[in-house]
Length: 196
Ligand SMILES: [Zn+2]
Image (cartoon, rainbow, N blue to C red; front, side, top):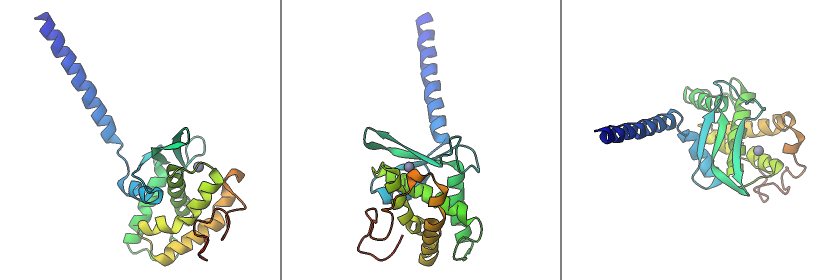
């Protein structure tokens, strides 16, 4: 009888652990829409997860997103600050609600920063480690990300130009490169005159 009780107790413990794991995994699923955009940019299947405090665009160390590498290989998950995810989803909602300002009607800087963060981590996920190179690629993907969230071609282009003008000066020098220009080493489409 004692051994059966022991077995039952062990089973219950296992069940409890499994249920607990299930619950904690379900509490924070990947963000489907943002994961799909990152996967398109990086050309592989990826997961974007949102973390941190509601409304916060940066974490305790000033970072808006993070991507781990094992050796030179990026992992398949990136983390964005909760406020970045919220800003991107709010931008989609405002577009769906008929927001037709050329630049976002409200909070253009926060929206540009958030679009840039998703694009930046996507290029890390694609395997780019150098921060200036990663950021230059991200700036060239602003219009792509904006359009995936529902912006028109004109709105996407306006956000790309605005981001190129406004964002680099707000980042540490490590994130800028003189090669980040039309026809430069980091131009993803050197034969195209569209920039960024
Ligand atoms: Zn980075």
